[in-house]
Amino acid sequence: MSSTKSDIKQYQDLLKQYLDTKDEVVLYQAEQLSKEIKQDVSPDEIIDEHYNTLLKLIPDMDSQIKDSFEFLIQTMTSYALAYKEYHELRTKQLELKAEIEVAANMQNTLLSTSIPQVDGLDIGATSIPAKLMNGDYYHFVQDDEGNVGVAIADVIGKGIPAAFFMSMIKYAMESFPENRMYPKVILELLNRVVERNVESGMFVTMFYGLYDVQRQLFYYATAGHEPGFIYRAQEDQFKEIDAKGLLLGVKKEVKYNQYVDEIHDGDLIVLLTDGVTECRSGDRFIEREEVLDVIKENKHLPAQDIVDNVYKYLERLQNFTLRDDFTLIVMKRSS
Image (tube, rainbow, N blue to C red; front, side, top):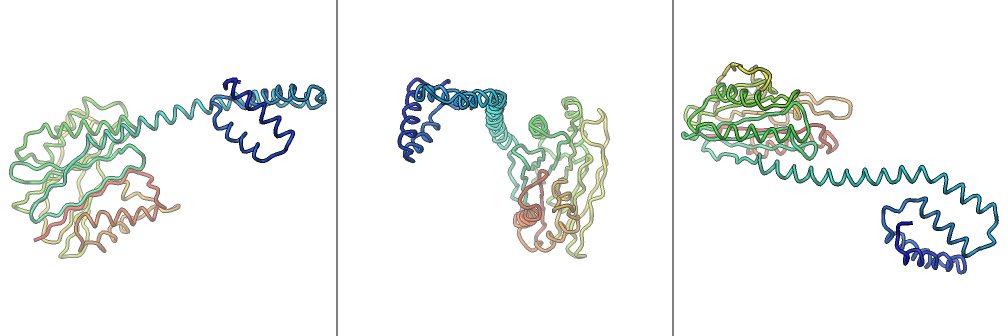
């Protein structure tokens, strides 16, 4: 037994007391002793020590009882090996969890972004990971004229490498000149970065938009990302953002198409990842129309409240357990 001699002596004394008195206080003391014994003590070691203690206390122990203890000790040997493996695995899991928590905090720091404050444009955004590490990403930039660039992305290929790969994309974006850069140019530059540095089997979907604050125009391009929506207040209906483009990192040289829409007073620009549109409630997938209905019901609220209310609604439908990373951005034009 791996415990100290004092533990063994105390165990022997408690066992003798209990056999003599049947006192429940002694049972409680034995329970407390078990908490002090080292965790690497296996069950068969405890049984063996118990048996040896009994032999000292009861020298003329019945032979059948002795045999039963031999049988029990042999039976517990295999269990003890499994018990030890379990504790070793549990220790490694706790160490890994601690490391992932550190990585998640580091990721939050590396990928932090500020929502721009722009007259006439209200912006709300949230990104909630399904697990500790987030495979989604969003980022805002402003050029010298105050125009707002917005990126939303999703890494195909999860885990810690995928999550940290986003930090490379962020810092690549921040290395671009601060003068106006249109979405198609941004995606073409980022594609070269991703193609040179991405691991095999890992790709990135991204939507990039540029909001022209003077002309109220929204330029955008996509690299295989989930289509967003524009809510037209005058018509009281959503228009799907119809844009296509190859995922980042698939080919070295890719040209992306660029599109533009005029944004009117009360219109909403809705950008998201598939964790929003492919939610599941029980055995059914939540339809896009249901998500859009929730946005429409909250359209009179500030943009951040719209985002938060959509998340709360879908979180409840999924019984407060996200199956995929959830990222949603709402940009609302107001006069």
